[in-house]
Image (tube, rainbow, N blue to C red; front, top):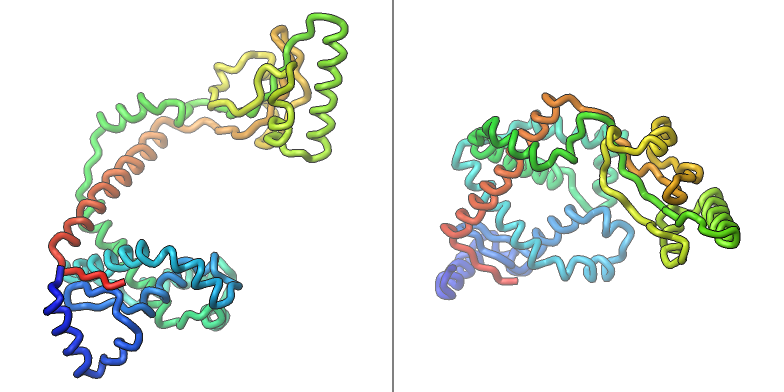
Amino acid sequence: MLRKGLLFFIILLLINSAEASVLLDRIVAIVGKDVITWSELYKAMSFEYEVKIRGLDAKQKEAFLKPLEKGFLEKLIDMRLQIAEAKKMKISVSDSEVKTAIESIRNRYGMDLDQFKKVLKKEGFGYNDYYQRIKDQILIRKFIQEEIDSRIVVSYSEIDEYYKTHKKEFPLDTSYRFAQIKLKKPESPREEQAIADEVKKIMDSLKKGTAFDDVIKEIKDNKYVLFAGDMDYISQRDIRNDFLKVVRNLKEGDVTSPIYAPDGIYILKIVKKQLPVKLEVIKDNIRNLLINNESEKRYKKWAKGLRQKSLIEILL
């Protein structure tokens, strides 16, 4: 951390320079020889949370952003340190890379460059500031790819071990996830009528458009309901035949008619239907997953190391 004397010396230098105007803005952090001002912090926060603060007036924006200041300042400090480190490693970003990234964003929203600039201006962002932020993001990503990801090696044994312990997540045949309502099997004519009425009530509610989850909430305490809730993934080969005949041709979101089985009455919703995937594709996906997990660990360690060897003063 910088000592107060050194901090005072830096401020004196700024007062005697053309940059003295930043004092009116207020310095919120000193990072090595660099400073972060309050306006820079708020501009970065406004950029990050643009969607959430859109349409808010000045007081509402301040109320939303104020609790996020300290956490976001830490993030901004990390970015400054990482950008400086990437430049030391001679990693650069060309104008064409930035323009391509911005073009991709524009195309996603169906805008030409002029329309895009107008939208940025309307939201309070200059195009040059936006351009620089995208450039910084690409620079950090390139550093991670070149200096971290490219050095990670995942062995076949690691892939096999992960697959063995997560088989349910990678089905080799079609698998289903159901939401289920199970009512008890009637044991008397009186009970048969009461349960039939309950089944009709449930189906009528679903046909009117009531969400399956909401129906579950309504009936969960009903004495005839044995189970109402979500189930884990189940492979097609493990589904009982009376269910499979019904669900095989249904799609995600569909709800079955009541299934009258020896052990009760079932109503099923197809929450998710996963089609089979080849083992080779599964193993490629696992390799990428393990690389991403290891990359995140190394990135956090590297970022922490940058902080430990840097002079940082937080003044917020």
